[in-house]
Amino acid sequence: MTPQPQPSVPQQQRLALIEQARKTVLESRAPLHQPVLAPWIERSWRRCLEIGLEPHQHITFDTVTSSAARHAIDANQPLLRAAAPVIQSLARAMAHTRYFAILTDASGVVIDVNGPVDRHDPHAISIARIGIDLSERAVGTTAIGTTLADLQPVWLHRGEHFFDDTSVYSCAGAPIWGPSGQCVGMLDLTGVNVIEQPALKHLVTQSARSIENALTLGQPHRLLLCLSWPGRMPGDASDGLVCVDADGQIAALNRSAADMLGIAAGLAPGHCSELLAVPVETLFDAARLQRGPLEVPLWSGLRLSVLAQLNPGGERGPLHGTSHGLPLKDVETAMIRKAVDDARGNVKEAARALGISRATVYRKLGAQRERG
Image (cartoon, rainbow, N blue to C red):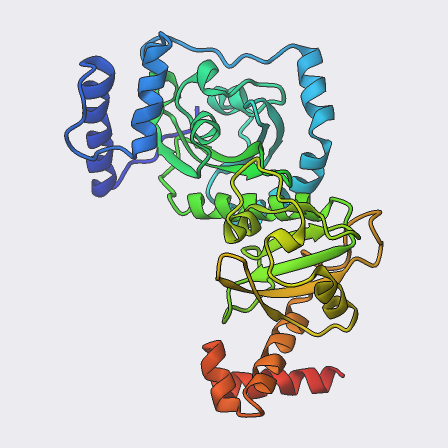
């Protein structure tokens, strides 16, 4: 067995509060009068009780049938391809933490495991296997089941898991949204008998977003729209991404774009002109002429910064060569140059509009001239 690290005094206090919450909710079935638990954890505990699960019963981590596991793998090839480089990069961020990554489909079946899994620890090998059902109904409250039930990022530590048998785990989870606006799976970072690492909730959320972007860009499209709020530099994983076909229909978009445009999960986004208060031809022209970011009004009255880029592969496949088709340095330079133009050459005014220093404006534009 892996030796269990000794918790610090604040950690001991936190574990004591968790134990108190377990006695109140799981043993006495009473309401919590203090916010000891995150609300989604208490909701998950009560769901588990409602379906007849008991925290003291022993559980086994069962695999689905071999045919069901094969189907999960085959049906989720796009997700596996999009997630592979992201999950591999997690190894650097978690190198010395003894946490590992688990990818599941939308029902909670494990389709990939990556990272330092201790094969001599039965707690680790119990869950780090392809085909294991880690849904809430199967293994109670975990980051995986809770994420898929509440569709939001979560962090759980030790006794916040429902079963006594799973109180050795600490885990962070985040849902992965597909290009059609549906949850297609989740990413989980788990450790066994490890110190608490709540920062992993941020890491798993950002990693899930990167996977979503890769899934979106993997859809056939003619035009890519990169959305950001005015004053922000586009080019990172938080950008809204909208894939548009040759007729102006939105073929795919990531969750950030759906949130910016006010599109509810699962709803068909429709045509560009139904959301953006400009003709779609304007966006295609901006992409052909490489005009850089444009401020575009929405029918709601809001305005977005939109960088339009043609897909050189037509509608046969995604853009290639950058993290999401947008070279960050070029995007930054285009936005800075546009701000200077809008300010009629007044660098001080342009810098104020962008929220950066005049020195940064001069440095960025100077670097672009040197590269040219």
